[in-house]
Image (spheres, rainbow, N blue to C red):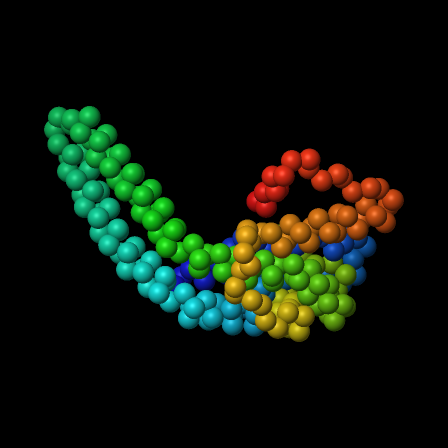
Length: 229
């Protein structure tokens, strides 16, 4: 299960960070720094505590997924061996070779579906944790920039070379811990991954329209709720 959380921490798929400076500010910036906001989110107390809670709450599903995953992988390996045997035959029976290849593909897809169903509650809990952190990340970034007197913050991936003292990731972690000391791991009924970020973005757009005197678009006429992804 640790691997799942490591992957989640590296990807942080739900993380949504809005620009905090305009493009012209790049040329005017006096203090520039870098910060890995995904790493900051993963290192935050809220995320670390939440992952421990998820491991405890969903231990049965986690253990089942790992055990079943090993069994399914063994079954897939048997099918791969059969395919390899067919591939070695001379002359090759193309129909048998294609059937063996399809058996491997079908088994892999079925295994992914089955394991996904087992881990669904775990994945939803992780997504909800990430979502809660994502909606507060801009606030933490701005606070860290203010504390470090930085007026332009860059992603480390966009920098070719830098000194260690320009990295304020730790400062972002500190601010995130202050702003959001903990999060819930229990997603509410009907929650969809990314929903909180989408709602936050909608609120920001509505606020911007209100400031400009532009009315918000009318709600859809149908009763079908909008998708969140």
